[in-house]
Image (cartoon, rainbow, N blue to C red; front, side, top):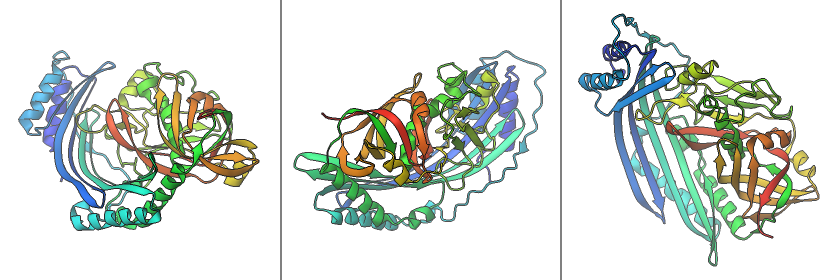
Length: 462
């Protein structure tokens, strides 16, 4: 049963059209969330909650007006519609809209609802993670483990006659191991997640994940510091894709393209990388953290090839982005909740696999850095300039992986790096994260195979 009646949705859309809106929409949502955090061998926090509300949007030309309410009664929804309608002018010939259900092929299956899982099972899983990380080494001084879940139902209706609803489930394990050597500390993070039910958490080998994080933290705290300089860099697979996501991906959303705030605005059809580079944003991947059956505008999600063999092929486009740029919609309209109007956002964004092995990439470098795992960083959106920390790195000497190093940062610009990617590996992996933008924080997946960047500025210690 939908969380929004079709009669209420139709009334709201009709009211907005009476204000001479070019497009009208209502988005309703009920979200049930739960999280538990386990620190220092005990439960530090357990939380759960329900959030329910709706957002009403009207577009006049290329300007939008938005209002939201946590009261989803018919009267409250009409008050929100009346408030938005004040931005327009009365029209006596507003068209009648017939809402037709969207028929979407939905490949996503949720087998175990988090609502049906006893709290004790979560505690046992996190306690096992804690014990495994600590048993790896006496240098592991702290373990921070958690499980989070969100089950969400949405309903969307608009003036194109779209009537769509969707049931969504997100589950994630988060684990940080901290290793200490004297006064120095280093941490390692693992955060596997899925667009799935609790069966995904049950499928994980949580003690092994915890031990792997502990091993990384211990290795880092005992490592020397990375030397600075301009050098070849082999960037590891999986979360290494965060550089493309942050330094290039946001610039390929019409959120920035429409404002000409993107370095890629006028480069469609032009070469932006070497022929070994293909990059994709795909919201259809079954069970992937950034996937859904429909986007938050009621459009079916799609697979969008952004860059193919080095040539810029497409942008990520929401409805307003299409109105402003003329580019076709790509099912990329996303929002954190009903409190935000949607905008173009990434979903599962990755550099596609190539044909080189890890050994091929490492052996081709005489002296450089292997950034096995990336950490956080900062990006200047208009230029793509970035500064990212290397969470786990190694020196490369004479074509071989040498000693581990810490404290390295990668400094450069996204558009420049695309042109410096010389080889792409075959070991494609994906990693989960949370992406923040003007429509709030949404689940996204980043990914790539291991790649070789000809040269990059590495920050370190002399």
